[in-house]
Amino acid sequence: MTQQRRAGARAPLSRERVLRAAVALADETGAEAFSMRRLAQELGVVPMALYKHVANKEELLDGMVDVVVGEIDPPAAGADWKSSVRQRILSARRVLLRHRWAARVIESRTGPTPAVLAYLDSVIGTFRDGGLSADLTHHVMHALGSRLLGFSQELFDGGGAAAPTAPTGAAGGTAPDAAGAYPRVAEIAAAAAHDTGSVVGGGCDDQFEFEFALDLLLDGFERLHRQGWTSAPDAP
Amino acid sequence: MTQQRRAGARAPLSRERVLRAAVALADETGAEAFSMRRLAQELGVVPMALYKHVANKEELLDGMVDVVVGEIDPPAAGADWKSSVRQRILSARRVLLRHRWAARVIESRTGPTPAVLAYLDSVIGTFRDGGLSADLTHHVMHALGSRLLGFSQELFDGGGAAAPTAPTGAAGGTAPDAAGAYPRVAEIAAAAAHDTGSVVGGGCDDQFEFEFALDLLLDGFERLHRQGWTSAPDAP
DNA sequence: ACCTGAACACCGTTCAAGT
DNA sequence: ACCTGAACACCGTTCAAGT
Image (cartoon, rainbow over all chains, first blue to last red; front, side):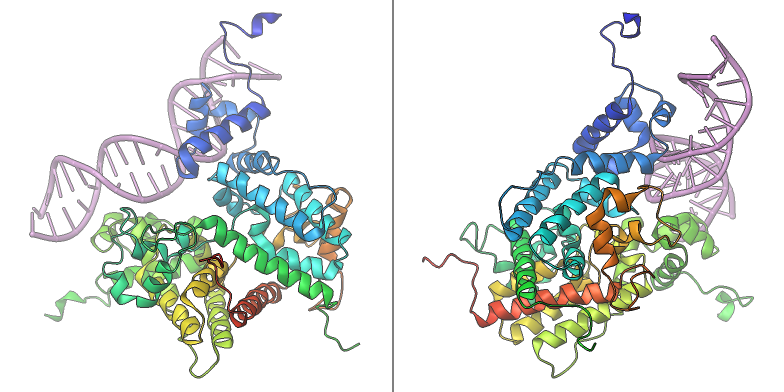
């Protein structure tokens, strides 16, 4: 009976174990190096064994997304809608920073998974309970977009403006003399003095930029809500 | 001498011709089906022939992005910064809608290409000439993010909320009884009555949602600009 | 009935052989 | 010197053969 677990051997495969191993492997190797074959190897199993627990790679990725989304904090009790949503989204951002492959994988999904739908449903509930109309909430959710899950498409991680200024080693090459050819980019890149206080040091404060845009949107939502904004034309 | 073009044959390969063919192929088949081998086949050429004109697939994709970005309208003359940026971004959006693979490919780039840098430099110029500080412009560029190039990460193309409501055929399957399990999602999905006037018809007006968020951000930028907003803590 | 090795149809790119 | 076929090291997945 206990024969099935032998020689201190690996636990029998299960969907749970496959998903957890997949998340761990992606955490270590990144989304690009991740493959069914590598995952099977990591689990000490022949590739085809995975197909007993997931239909194919797409379904595996869906499952991995659900694991990650499940790590987002539940909504805080007793806060107003604006700070509640803010906290939730910043929690999602911390989760995404733990699993850096996740943003790219989420982007590649063609449809929402149950865990994502449950999360969206919960956030929508916060807006609706806060008094926002279904109409406004609809557009608000669109406006937040991927920010809801803690990421946003920064052009070329760091905002494109980061590369030309700091000679920090990486990235260069593509645009020699960028500072001369694109003076506005160089000027703007140098204007990120908030965390170090020094203009040199280089690099942007991603957290600051994320919250800047997030707060701008949330403030805009609040303003529209107070004004009783509606998307329908004000004719009858 | 004129022997090189023979039998009404194909023009000799060049970087230009490779890039144009690549864009055309991606337009037809989408980003997923696009491959070096398929492109070579389309050009009636052995795969290795491409490597005379591009170093590898990454460089080819960079070139394709530059072709697309080159299609964005130049800045309109004599407009205020806000409407100038708005027009430019809506032009970028029209370009991206012509090349639906482009958003995904741009996301995958690790650094900005020359054409992208030139575009960013130009947009930054519009903000700076409009009187915005380098500091504010820096954060504004971050806040716009991928929206600058005409797209934004919509969760699961259509906003996740679209799927559960309309039985329009596609997408379903993953979440049966979604309307029951996620009632807020269903309510919000039904609240998109702006273009058809009918609640049924289903689907979101992507253009409306894109402009909604864009205008919310631009309005926020204008408000901060008028207030003389600075990111530095107001203590010295 | 279950599991799995080999095979299939790809992929980007290297490399050596042919001209 | 140039071009290119075969080969390499992958990939996700099918399928038939083995137990």
